[in-house]
Amino acid sequence: MEMTDRKKQILKIVVEEYVAAAEPVGSKAIAQRMPGKISSATIRNELADLTEMGYLEQPHTSAGRVPSAKGYRLYVNELM
Image 1: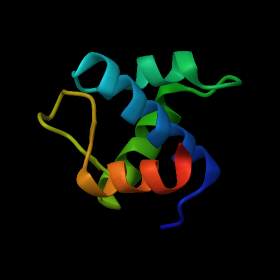
Image 2 (image 1 turned 90 degrees about the horizontal axis):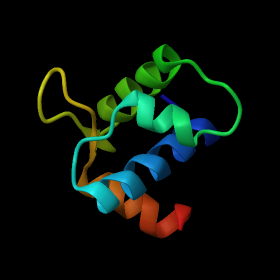
Image 3 (image 1 turned 60 degrees about the horizontal axis):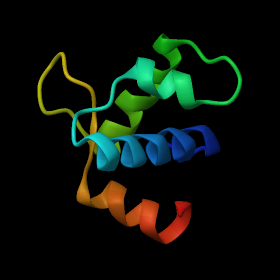
Image 4 (image 1 turned 90 degrees about the vertical axis):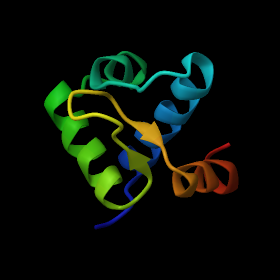
Protein backbone atom coordinates (compact mmCIF):
# COMPACT_ATOMS: atom_id res chain seq x y z
CA MET A 1 0.00 0.00 0.00
CA GLU A 2 1.27 3.45 -0.87
CA MET A 3 1.33 6.46 1.46
CA THR A 4 -0.54 8.98 -0.70
CA ASP A 5 -0.89 12.71 -0.05
CA ARG A 6 -4.51 12.13 0.99
CA LYS A 7 -3.47 9.49 3.53
CA LYS A 8 -0.82 11.87 4.92
CA GLN A 9 -3.40 14.64 5.19
CA ILE A 10 -5.83 12.34 7.02
CA LEU A 11 -3.09 11.15 9.37
CA LYS A 12 -2.15 14.77 10.12
CA ILE A 13 -5.77 15.59 10.98
CA VAL A 14 -6.11 12.49 13.19
CA VAL A 15 -2.95 13.36 15.14
CA GLU A 16 -3.94 17.01 15.60
CA GLU A 17 -7.53 16.18 16.61
CA TYR A 18 -6.39 13.44 18.99
CA VAL A 19 -3.81 15.70 20.65
CA ALA A 20 -6.45 18.43 21.07
CA ALA A 21 -9.30 16.24 22.39
CA ALA A 22 -7.65 13.00 23.64
CA GLU A 23 -10.51 10.99 22.09
CA PRO A 24 -10.57 8.67 19.06
CA VAL A 25 -11.15 10.59 15.83
CA GLY A 26 -13.98 9.55 13.50
CA SER A 27 -14.59 10.07 9.80
CA LYS A 28 -17.05 12.96 10.32
CA ALA A 29 -14.49 15.03 12.23
CA ILE A 30 -11.94 14.37 9.50
CA ALA A 31 -14.40 15.24 6.71
CA GLN A 32 -15.05 18.64 8.32
CA ARG A 33 -11.34 19.51 8.17
CA MET A 34 -10.55 18.07 4.72
CA PRO A 35 -10.35 20.56 1.86
CA GLY A 36 -12.83 19.73 -0.87
CA LYS A 37 -15.62 17.23 -0.53
CA ILE A 38 -14.67 13.67 0.36
CA SER A 39 -17.27 11.15 1.48
CA SER A 40 -17.16 9.55 4.92
CA ALA A 41 -16.92 6.15 3.22
CA THR A 42 -13.76 7.20 1.36
CA ILE A 43 -12.27 8.51 4.59
CA ARG A 44 -13.13 5.25 6.38
CA ASN A 45 -11.37 3.30 3.61
CA GLU A 46 -8.28 5.48 4.00
CA LEU A 47 -8.43 5.05 7.79
CA ALA A 48 -8.57 1.27 7.32
CA ASP A 49 -5.50 1.44 5.06
CA LEU A 50 -3.61 3.60 7.58
CA THR A 51 -4.55 1.15 10.34
CA GLU A 52 -3.36 -1.80 8.26
CA MET A 53 -0.11 0.07 7.53
CA GLY A 54 0.44 0.56 11.28
CA TYR A 55 0.02 4.36 11.46
CA LEU A 56 -3.30 4.28 13.32
CA GLU A 57 -4.98 2.06 15.90
CA GLN A 58 -8.65 1.40 16.54
CA PRO A 59 -9.28 0.98 20.29
CA HIS A 60 -12.80 -0.47 19.83
CA THR A 61 -14.72 -1.79 16.84
CA SER A 62 -17.10 1.17 16.65
CA ALA A 63 -14.58 3.79 17.80
CA GLY A 64 -12.65 6.25 15.70
CA ARG A 65 -8.90 5.95 15.25
CA VAL A 66 -5.95 7.05 17.36
CA PRO A 67 -2.36 7.52 16.18
CA SER A 68 0.18 4.77 16.85
CA ALA A 69 3.83 5.43 17.72
CA LYS A 70 4.63 4.94 14.02
CA GLY A 71 1.96 7.52 13.12
CA TYR A 72 3.36 10.06 15.57
CA ARG A 73 6.87 9.54 14.17
CA LEU A 74 5.70 10.19 10.60
CA TYR A 75 3.80 13.27 11.76
CA VAL A 76 6.84 14.71 13.54
CA ASN A 77 9.31 13.84 10.78
CA GLU A 78 7.27 14.80 7.71
CA LEU A 79 3.95 16.49 8.41
CA MET A 80 4.66 19.26 10.91
